[in-house]
Length: 249
Image 1 (cartoon, one colour):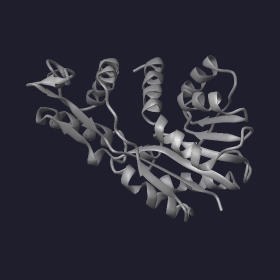
Image 2: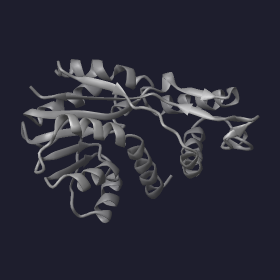
Image 3: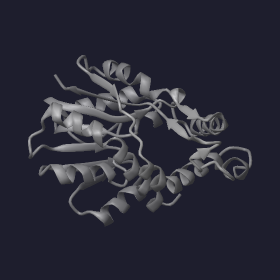
Image 4: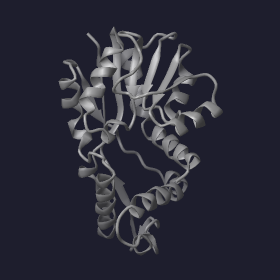
């Protein structure tokens, strides 16, 4: 997948988590001129959301330079930095709000990243993980989709993803020093229009994952794989996705 396709995927994911972001931001009630940092900002899909809502400083940090360049070409309103989220160049207590989105699942030491997020957040400020999936709890139905889901999980695991990050999120927050973390699971609401619009992108992402395995992906994705009506039944795919947020005391 190229950067444009990945950006489309990130925008799709940002749409899935919009309800959780809205809930969290309502709870923490950020001031209009807040200084906000995203660790792992990628192509800027979630930064775009904050640009529409906030008038303060928006900073995106990511270790992947091509994604930052893509974001910079799209928007000039953000401060973008190519750096390691584990060792950011910021002084203590720089930001009112620091967050990440679909990031911890890629990390071997997520607690250390959360500690760094805590360090650069002001006392009384907030840290949030907007979305961390739990692939080991996924539901694929009907049964002929179950094998596809298991193979995708295997591919993701081979790529270094922790398939159980979602269920571990609350513990990660506690170990990072947050004694007051609130957590939850993003609700699932699916409409026929979503199915029609997302099929092509879902096929592209799944093909990319399966391509990394040592078998012929065409045998798995051909035919009725992305047809929602299978023997009169609609396909169901649900991957529980957790969120968590806490105040820096």
